[in-house]
Image (cartoon, rainbow over all chains, first blue to last red):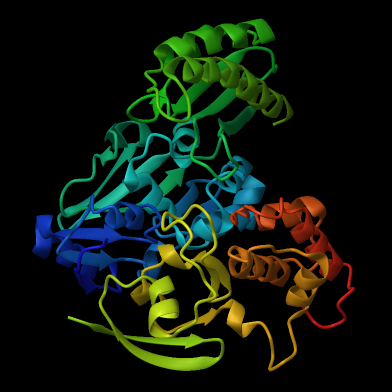
Length: 291
Length: 159
């Protein structure tokens, strides 16, 4: 049962920040509500004031240029990202990630900002944004700040957003040449949350032989989305082979801290990490060789 | 504490006064008596509540009604024109694309949204288009057959 609340619908970012500042702990922000309404129906979240930011058009944008890379506003819907020609042409892996996210209906109304601020470690965007080296931007009445994705997630459903702050957007740098990225997740039913999600980005040197940089991120394998840094070290500076990818997967499975729940045991999740890191790594490598 | 909501539903304008916590599915079912959209799971998992809002398929159990203010909604009740069924409805009848009928309203709306966006989907695209709608009875094949028949032009009218 959703409890009664007073509803506010600011039209600008400034208006929203003023309201957040005014109501402090008594308010909660709603984007598309595709995650929040589930919590509110369960009575887990019951604010006195609900501030709907869905109407703030200045936060709904997808822009890209050669210098600053890709910029996505917090209120951009998942479906807009999925269908954007700019993203399909320049950052295809994000569109591919979105096709795995929930279902079309959810993607039509839910926003990328809402997804990230919900702070679910099983979320799809965080791991791929992490390996793409994305920066997350937020604003308060006192100014703006930005941080890498790794710093944004603190714990289950807890982010680094301070009271009075709104998440405003994402910036994804242009990938270096010879870079390939991929994301997949294992889920029991298509359109379910990830049982385990893995994103990998590989940058090869100019000759295409040696791995110059690699990032591996795991979703639903810890209290937050995490980098598997020890697994990355296995691959960095080396010529990547199937065997090496297998080794990286094995190491990554030990870096994970997954839970056991109705979808999978801890052991099964570790096994999924091991296999998916190798599989996604292969896909990223193939992309890097073509890029 | 109620707020005003203006909504056009199946071409009809409405002005309502609702508590802010009201969901779109509640406006449709409880305030407007349009019980086509079903509250199957209440957790955004089943799609039986799917309607088309501003041209997009959404799960009406997961849309705060006030966020749809000023918008246009199409429900299953709005598919037929007078006594003439929509091609999708004809196809569903002909192909037995329903049994208990509980998922059907939502399934029809997802189907319409799919064909509005892509009038010639492949079989794979049809399956993707309805993957947000769960059916316990049919096993989906009859639904896919019905949609394929519409896509193939077996129901002459404009989709």
